Length: 303
Image (cartoon, rainbow, N blue to C red):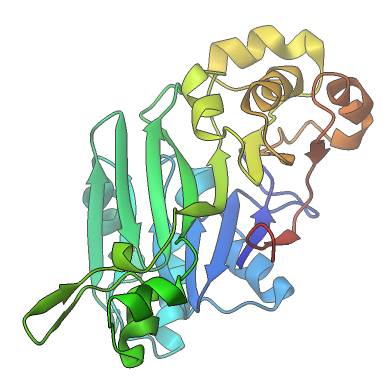
């Protein structure tokens, strides 16, 4: 099971009814945050979720509306008596940027670990998450992220018995562990069938529509994508500042074949995103104009 909450849907500046960009994922007691704009803490409190179990924070880029909430967020985690290390991932320069922000949050009771991204595509694991980072097209270095929860094949009891694998090792093998026992090496592939469809969510903001986005969002359970402007007449502005219109985002959704799509990162001038919904649903019917606090529970297929 993967829980997703879109904590903030605003771009550029917070509004009384719209916090800045942030998304939280929860799985198996581990939380992952993407971006930490101003108001992220308040949105998290309103949702009733805790910052303490956040184990990973991924940053798309370092414009203020995506990272300005970090110092206070770190202090709140420290005040919640967190002691476990926290992984921070983002484009090259992350440690320098966070170091500057920590001038107002200098003492923390936990270690910060940094993963600086430099390739156009990178993958790393963090707790239950497989995270794919892919570079997009903004006016500074910017990444989109796909979060996946893999799912092993079904456990085959008959194969386990036929190979005389003791029952006490079954659950460990089912979780993917390799075991040495009485001179034998027991591996998961000895007892598991083909890998089944897992869970995947792609999140991308601050970019022009580039093919790599639809590639990573292909057949995802949820695709969260920026829609800076709903008005068609702002297409030239979107191109100039390296953002997207609703129509461009909807075409990416159609190419991806995602099972559901949410728009986010709205311009402050876009007061009622839902007014453009019928128009973009003509392009991709599974698109929605998200609001702060939207959440979804995504389970494994067939459960």
